[in-house]
Image (cartoon, rainbow, N blue to C red; front, top):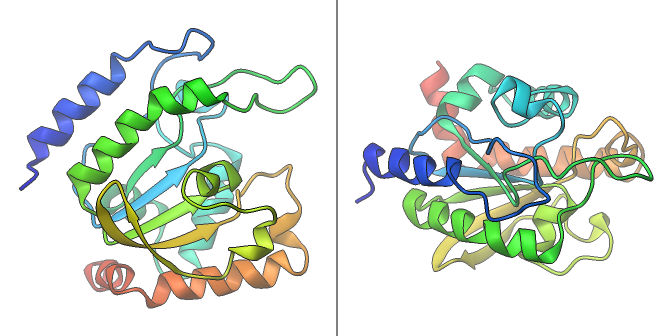
Length: 205
């Protein structure tokens, strides 16, 4: 059985990783906790290295408003949900605007850490935030194909319920307009109904 020391050791090794020369360290991780819920994001933004935690800036404010709407505020979420990502270092800026999308080699390099976390955590619920995270586990052309649905999958030999979410980026209008707005509400309802989310709500009382 995974002990907290195993997660601490894993994160220490992860923080020392420098496999991707085009990525800008430091490596961003959440607190070393054990959780039955795993959130997988895309990659840190420009503010996360300064603040030292995932979803620390504008997108995070939106994301935590979503979760607050189904009963869990940001402090409790950070204390009880393991937050990870497809890539852990800031990819840098895209000359055409926005953040650079990590390339296939960078994603492959970081997948070893993500797979290790699936093994360590043995989650029962996985939240995939953003299309890059969703694409690592299921083929999708349009977000309307997967948002608002729950999938039973095996990820790195771990059987889990998977609920995709759109990325809460301020640059995106998808989650603020139909049908994205309604599908987001459907996805949040599915999260709230899940037994592991219900367990968080009981702890919150």
